Structures are given as structure tokens and as C-alpha cells.
Image 1 (cartoon, helix red, strand yellow):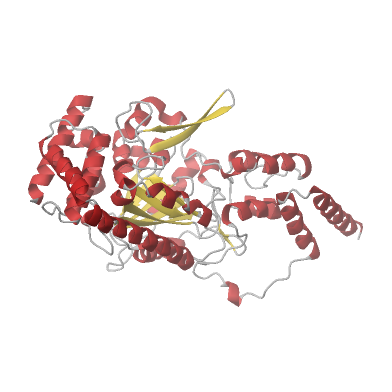
Image 2: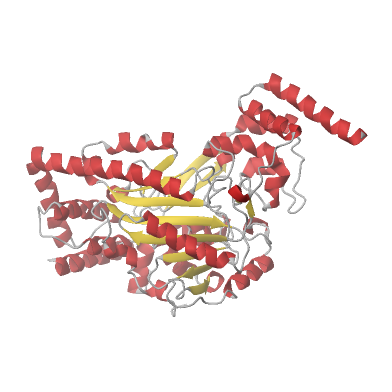
Length: 354
Length: 169
């Protein structure tokens, strides 16, 4: 499996740290759930039929160069060891469900990792597009183009009444889940994140901590996404989510400014402490690392400390995770070794940024 | 949130387990998932229909949960329990019984948005008038949703009478 780039390269285009509002919106993602009209949903398929469907996807000819869909690799996940599949989970390219499934799963993925398609997950196809910053429109265009291309070869299960038919009724209709990853340290620091985020479900949106389901994510990272997929057009869903993102970004920016004006000493203390620990620690737990990197990122963006590129922070988000660390060091690390390598990685990355 | 098993890695996986009928939510990291759970883990355990115990019970009594999809064999009861369709034909099979579910999940019951290339756009379609029976079925679903069982029973009678009438034709 080592021939595939996605297992070996821990940088993806979404980490570039560019794009609109990229100081707060780390990345944007659009996912389309699709099923083939001629096959029952994966949960009702035998292994043999799952294999048949994967082969059907493999038979789609590579499209002409220049349309952005030409460099897709198809990975047969049934041939990939579980540890390697977990690397893809930590990279947010496949779901834990697909990684742990005993079925015949697959992944189509392009070189920049801006487009991927999970095969035989809960639905036959989960088309995903991922870009840095605030770029939901771009994600939608890319995912929709891939959807059109695939639909020419695999007619989708679709009804006039209910739209795209999905395994779970929570995805029926557009099958579209749009989400943004937000870095909200100032709102968390001032304890405003709870109010803001608890109010979202009322409007048909969910918010969760990036790592885990708790109301406060590790490293002040949150994922906001739409829940409603039926009865709204894709453009409406994206426009509405963009409006919500504008509001949250505005609140975070205002709170950062307030902190600078009214609590500068407190803020500086937090940021300088974070920098000191990250640049000197020899052992780092992942939770502590997330938290300190979040503070340093804030300090860097507010120019309280030397400026570090956003790309470094995004890169570390990925590298610090346990399965990827094991993969990088080519061994099963003990808890202490893991903390040591994590601290080493962070010191190295931050040295480069000065 | 940190992993509930090792307490050191971030929890990236949420799953649900039932112990003595009591449902528990677990958050664990990729590493522990790999080590300890393996294939018997049912992941992504979001079950929207667990939100509708009442509806599910009503379905038991009144709505004929033995109704089964001719393509994949999924019954309405099993769909209510696990919250997942077995195939695309389940939608047509369960038909208007899905209306309250979609209403609750999406506040809407009909698709608006992308059509696959080559399929007619809704504007190109002739608006098809729902039959009286279909209207009653939608009202029935709505009545169940609103727990208005009196109206529901009335509507069900009307539908049955219409069906009997057709059979006698």
C-alpha cells in the first residue's frame, strides 16, 4: 500500500492556511451521500456484491486532464492493514466505520487530497471535498463535478419526491453535509463559546468539538455543519451556513480585539507561557499540546509573538496524533516515547517558523 | 475530549453500547478502537428514530409494521428500530409513513435542489395532483405526528374504505 501518497505524505492542500478568514476558519468541507440505483445499500450487500460495486467504480475511465478529477487513485481498503487505515481516519479522509468495517471498502483520492470518495461506507459513495479557509462554494463545485462524473457511469438512486436516497433518513434529499472547522480561542477564553454553540441546533445546525463530542473541543477547534438536507437547495444550505460562519467569525474577531484592549496583560501571559512550554518541553500530552498550540496560534495571529505560519499549526494538528506518530516512527511507541516524539516534532516545527 | 479508555489520546470515535437496556455513549481514540473493539464495533451510531419512541410504538399498533420492502426485505419495524433503510426501494414501500420522520429531521418533506444530469427538472415536470387517498395518507402521518389519534383513526377509516371501494370495483 506504500505506493499511495496518502499513506506517506502528511501534508494536504487544506493545511496551506490560505483562503478567506483563514485566521479563524481553518478548513471547509462538503460531503455528498450517494447510492447506486441498481444496488441495495451497503448494509444489505454481501461481500461479493460489495466487491462487484467496488469494481464498478474502478471501471470508471480516468477523465480528461484539466478538469481536476484526473488524478484520482482508487485504494482497495480490504487490502490495507488496519493501522494504515487508521492513518486515514486521523487524516479525516475516511470514517472510523469504514476503517473498522470487515466489508470491501474503497477510497478514491486525488493528490492534493482536496477530493475523495469513500466507497461502501454507510452509503455506496460519500463524495468529499476539502479546502483551506472559508471555501464552501469551492468545495461544493468540486464535489458536485465529481458527482456528475460518477453519475454518468453509475446512475444514482434518486426520486423526484425525496431527492437523493440515502441509507439514513438524516441525509435524504441533497445528501449534502457542509462543514467548517473553526478556531475560536477568544470565545472559549471569555466563556462565550457555549452560548453561541448551544444556540445552533435550534436553527438546524450542529456544532461539535473537533476531537470528541463535548461542547468544548480540544484546542478550541469546532466543527459547525448543517443538519437539514431535505427541502433546501444546496446553494441555500451553503449560503445559510456561510451566514452563521460570518456571525461566529465576527464574534471571535470582536472578542480578540476586546481582549487586546482590556486584558492585554492576561492574554500576553497566556501566549508567552504557551510559547515557552512548546519550545522547551521534552514530553507533551496531546491534550496539553492542542491547548498550547491554540494559544500560540492566537498570539501569532495577534502579533504578540513572532509570527508562525498557519501551515505549521495545521501540520502539527495532524502529526501529533497517535497512529500517525507511530507511522512516522515506524514502530509502536510507548506512552512516554509518544510524548517525547510529539514534543520533538513541535520544537522542530516551531524552530522553522521563526 | 479525551479517550475514555486510555485517557491520553483525543477521542475521535463515538459509539453507543447497550448494557442491560441502558444506553451509554462512549468516546474513544483511534488507537484503542483498533486494539480493543475491532469489527464488532458498530460505528456512527446516530439513530434518528430513537427520537421517536412514541411514533415507533404507534407504528407497532396501527401502521402495520409487518410492511416489508419487496427488494431487500426491510420491515417498517426494523427500519424504526435501526434508523437505516435497506435499499432505495424502502422509500417507496414506506411512502407517506416517512413524512413525520422527515418533518422532524428536516422540517421539510420534499426535495429541492440538485437533480442528476438527464433527469427532468421539477419545473419541466407537469405538477402531478396527489390523489385524495394520498392526501388522506399525508394528513394521517401528520395527525400521528401531532398525537391527534382521533383524527388519525378517522383518516385511517377513510383510507380503508377507499381501498375497499377500489377492490369492489
